[in-house]
Length: 111
Image (cartoon, rainbow, N blue to C red; front, side):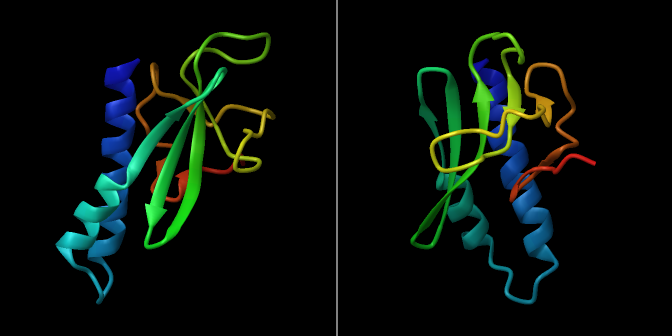
C-alpha cells in the first residue's frame, strides 16, 4: 500500500501543477511547496491525507486501511469532517485504479 500512497501523493501534486500552470500567478516554487506539504496521518481505521496551503490545513480525503463490511482496503473516501470520512460511497481505490478521480482539491464528487 505504501507505493500506492506515494503514487497518490504524486498524482495530487501533478494535478496541482497542471492547474497552476494556467494561472498568471504560477511559480514553480509554489508547486514544490504544495508537494512538500502533503502528508499522511495514520488513524485506527483510516489514513488521512492532509494538504497545507499557506497557514491552512485541509483534509484531502481518507484511505480505508483494512476491508470492512462496506469498503475494501485502499478505497478513497471524501472527508465529512476533519476527523471522519463520508461513508456513502468510495471515490476510487488506490490499489486498483488509474487515479482519474483524483484532483488536487480532493476526490471527485459522485455523479
